[in-house]
Image (tube, rainbow, N blue to C red; front, side):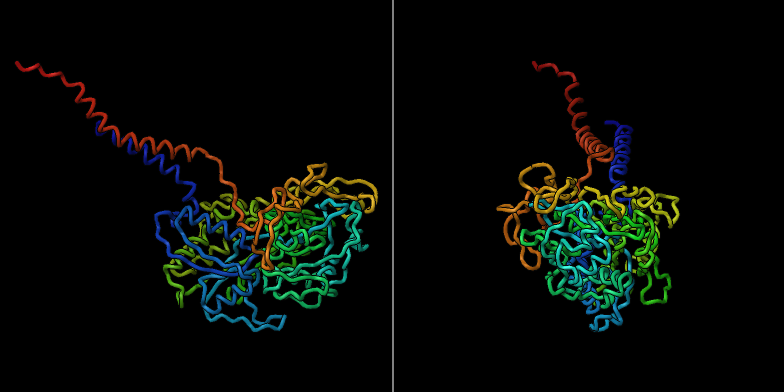
Length: 535
């Protein structure tokens, strides 16, 4: 191979490789597979854990980064951060200097900042059947939800529930409210909403420790709540979890009545619309700097909005002290930047809503304060689906494209048959009463008859998984048509595109570059004239 040809092949190889790896490096040149990262450890929220587990897997694969995390509840995470036993924590609420539930004040001695990481909706996952068929289109108003978790509404055929559900012949069955037994940011968000909207009913205020209703049960972690509701013995139960857990479990969530008079599911779209009315504490001298103020979200009169929408925080150190070093800061900064940009791409698939630009910019300011990192985010090079280069921080591409609800979702005599969350099957609506199997129901799994759940609806029998009190899988496997899924959600692997084919071309060129000299030498040898035989 001539020198000129070799240079041309080398240049083509470099170009192909550069284009091929561009998608992996687009978040920032500083987040690189060529960098050596030390391991970091965090703990806290189970509300955010499904997203966090996927992000940890992604950065491990792409960048060789190790991020350890224990989902032990937001309260435990904040406590671990105060005790200095973790590098970061995840929580739905800030440190509580004066907890309303009478628990000890939370006053960390470490320097810290709050960084938004992911948005989502606190949902109400339930397990209910009518005439042996699973209900997937339940609707509930806020006062009814509050009374259910106060233990004041105890039967599914209560007139307040039937008023929300005109197409359902509600069964005369006991309601079992499932709450968190551990200190939980999910409990705090739920009780904050009730204390703001239904203070005449809920007088406890915001609390991370949810009082167990007299007819209810308490479970540890979001997986524990979802695990109980999804079992055959959980029929009649309803619990509060992040939407992602219902999506994973193959079970429906209640559509909640918003200020505009529509019953709405907590999809990525409806959460994005709701959070357009969120306010942020912008006082840098406040101990709650960058935390959310949700009154506008609860009272958002856009018909597309889900009222129990919020976002969670990563609590990051802003000083190298204790177990936290600048080397760890380099890892934490790289991981946090990935989370704010590229990590948001599949938030909707995981059951969350991606963060808009104003929260990414707020997070960028906190990235600059992490020791060993010190860099912000260039929004023109940030693969976040809520904005594009040149967008205003007040825009949210997801919210702008969010569809309007169906007319049957409006409060009144009609009711949509569409299932929700992990049970998207339509619910056939028929006349009749509970005794004759009338009302709107969706088929349970197993028979494949009309209304049978394709992804929702749990099959009873030998295929059902069995969970302990903490939601851990004991035996069995998830039924093919539903049931709780205990393993972390894995987003689908994207199909091959031009970049991947360029990578293949680069490898072929590399092999050609290696093999060419040997081929050329062999060719030269074979083309030499054969010397005459000696006499």
